[in-house]
Amino acid sequence: MIELTEDSILNGKIKLFQPENGYRVAIDPIILANFVTLKAHHKVLDVGCGVGAISLILKMKENLSEVTALDIDEEMCQICMQNSAANALDLEVINMGIEENTFLEERLFDQVVTNPPFLEKKSSRTSESKKQANVETISLTEWIRRCLNKLKSNGIFSIIHRASRLEEILSALKNTAGAINITPIFPKYNWEANRIVVQAQKSNKSETKILPGVVVHRDDGNYSDYMCRVLSGNF
Image: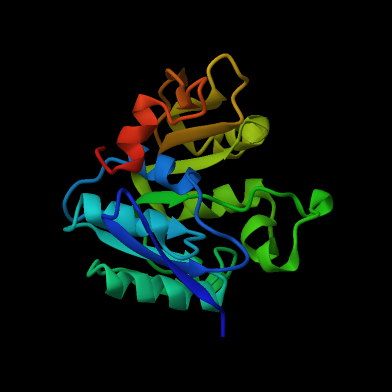
């Protein structure tokens, strides 16, 4: 049995059970969820959902949406279902990898969101307890292509990743999605961006835009005013 802690996000609006050791929810999924705009009855797929932070936030934002949480890790899926019940936010949780062909033959979605593993297999030095969540099982390019395969025409794809992987992300989107919006995420003012949020629309050929960036911390180390709103759930 995994030892769990009971935590909360968005100033207590969402209760979150998560492993005491191993991967724990940071601000990346909360930032990404902030960028996703939902409509009632939208069908949303969260690829690599972990304990369900993004899925829960999206369901809270638009309760009439249909949110499917997908993860290859059976234990994470069980915790995600526990979090779904604890928050009375109805999620469909599927224990399966995005690379499994049986899933790719099924439904299409209005939106696909993902906070994928950040580390390439060849460069990973992460601990065993974090490896499943942090280390790629397939290449980022293949991960993105399979996510795009799950989108309806004109559906929206949203990803948060390291800024250093932007070229690979744009290459994976080429010829399949356009109207790309890139938002740099800066750890502090006047620092280089270390994260990016990229959103794109399938089958759309409109131009790419770089949007104003988001600063996470002020110079005094406290969260920026923007991040205070995001972390409190005042989207």
